[in-house]
Image (cartoon, rainbow, N blue to C red):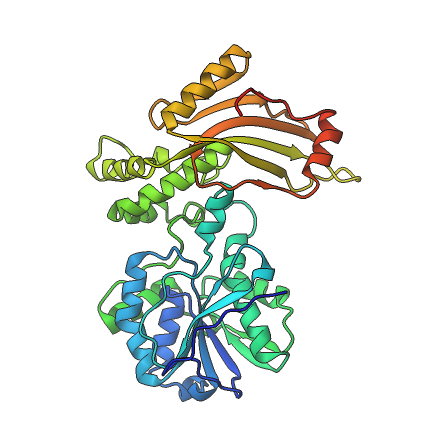
Length: 407
């Protein structure tokens, strides 16, 4: 059964409005902020009845600090001044069945809530992976789209409403994608920035003139799409401005790559290789990374299955991850190296940051195939096994999992 949590009813919170007919998605970035700020100068002239409108924000949990500060300083006062209903949402857990949490529902919001009970970072870290740069932005759909849709379905229950999206004039493709994929009964999508011809530069210029500040792009601190969007240099500068955040993201990537060498944040490139230890600002990020690694580590047994469908198409990769030891990184690495070498198993060791990895069954080149390894990494990854994993493993490998005497 779906579990849905709500903020307790307090003065100014929990406003109920049965006559809602308009939803404005606000991501706190320059585009949607420019629309909101411009619209609030003359709501009726922009076709907005504030009594029938709600602004919706989905908290990913990893927004950059300056974005939250700017939102609190400039936009939340505007929302309060105009009595705009502002609803902030987040996920309760990994599964859709976990439901969502209303972090705040108010016409006098005090702050942009940083995170909810379960964030995209929590989700990625717990299974030892990073967002994938290839394909659709599943991470955004998971952390924002799914959460907003839950609230919209509950609130409107099929009643007609319009949802205003902050896509800028350079994102005509996103409007087309929204129109093609939207299946919610009663919903009509609107894209005013595209209709106005406001591109990203126009939005930024408007906010600079209006508030006297440069409004940065809103995205998660560990977003992988900064490379494909051509904004990697700006992203790295943000990292250097926040070395502690850089250290956290470096740990996330390093942990993922310990369990899967292909889990690089930027496809073929890692974040780690983009920092030069001879540069003081880069060195600060690497030192923060080293501090992040100063925690208990675990030894993990990882298996993957690369299977085909009956008609020969590749299926999603199945994985089994099991923690088999806990200790200091050097202690676990020495143990894994010693035992692996005695049993003739190939082993890799990173003497700088501590990871050790032993390949019991290296990955082949042709599907179907299996791989198996033992690896050390920060102890943030949970035990997890996909459904029917053992059955498929036995069928492909024709026997139980290979073992090193590590338990």
